[in-house]
Length: 256
Ligand code: PEP
Image (tube, rainbow, N blue to C red):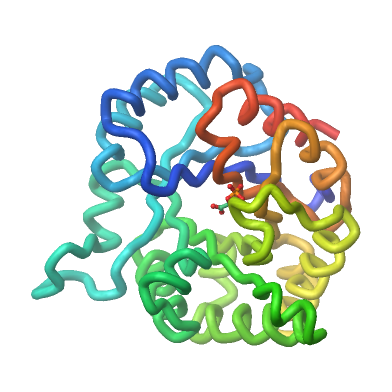
């Protein structure tokens, strides 16, 4: 990590887990387990229905709340969808955009990821934009071009000013929820490729400033090594963010 030029962010992604009452209990546990002054920003991205309970529970702590998705239209006949301004009014600061589970199961495309990212940024949210190759793409040797394409399209129409509220999460699809983690070297290499794309689009200063996380089976045991790499500025954490002691260990591992 390069904490002199950029912010380290450890963010949990609860996916479709936890009811509102369970949210309150888990966040109270986290507040006890987390260090008082962590070396990173700490975010929990929770299901829509848990946002109110989460925003209430994190009061007085270092934890900030994110959502797991956002629709790109500001309002209208989009049954079941949630807009960026709705999230803002509920106290949400971050939103995950283009998670591979949304791309895989809900027909999310590079283009809709771009629309969602812009809607989030225009509303003042920080967008955690997920990119990453499938196992087939890695085996075919097209990891670099896959993440470069996803990053470029996600950032289309995003100004340099808006980029300050963008986090890119490198999440190899084969490592998500599988227990199979990318090696620290693989994570560092691809996070570096993403930074190079940002450099080509926005210049060196922007590339040095942007937070690029790694996500994919990061846990209490492997976090220290992954977070020691110069291009890895934090993590997007699925399974381990549902266990307060494990999530706290990952946050502590950012202190290096
Ligand atoms: C994720 O959901 O973004 C993720 C990285 O999940 P896990 O940590 O469980 O692999």
